[in-house]
Length: 57
Length: 222
Image (tube, rainbow over all chains, first blue to last red; front, top):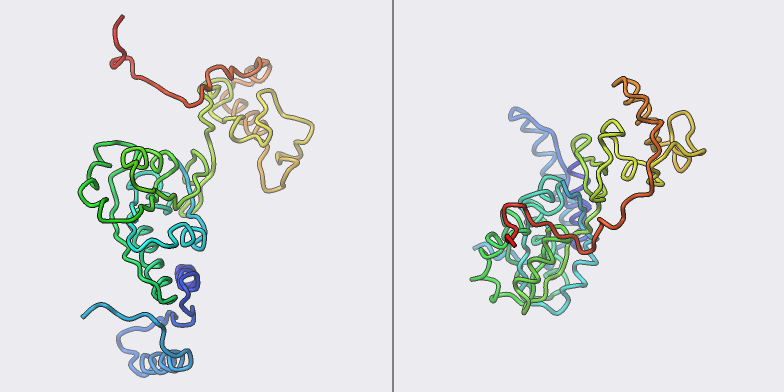
């Protein structure tokens, strides 16, 4: 529910909603965690960079 | 509480076109409870605006603050030292709060971020329904605590109309017939005779616009 809502907020703001996905994992699920990171890395690579530059330094 | 919902993002974004610095001001009362204009919603809107402007290569500084409420001057005063730093203000209060803020800082353009909808109650988490039209002439004593003005689609004082059908309104099967609800409530309370009373036409003379109320203790003695 809240993930879909937040995807909508991103879309409104001009950010691809696919950049957000929720994975349910426990601390003992390291292989699954890696799979999730790999999946999101591929998504980020496919979408390319946004124009947003982090001002946090 | 006063129930409101946020305007579409594109509408808010278009309002502040050309602004370089905006202050997003939330309200900690009703609109905070109905998840439309509280601290969290201020953070979301300000973040969205920053992202959207930056994505379009435009400059925008969006400040954030949430006041206890925007319908009291003592709380609006809290932004007096910072408001001059901004080109415009986006108020996330109800229509009353937006106007009071705009009145107090009349040299600053104040934009509304919400559409104010009604006076209502929280049915369940994330769902609200209208219960009062603020008609200045309450009839709830006779109707078993159910308002025919706010709950009946036609606002009928003497119902039900011919459109009632198995407890539902002719306008929608999703909508309860207010007068069936009133009948059932009065029956439960043993006050069914109340329904025989014919209400005269409503006293619209008490619905002065704009409404104003002065507490007895604050009235000037003649």
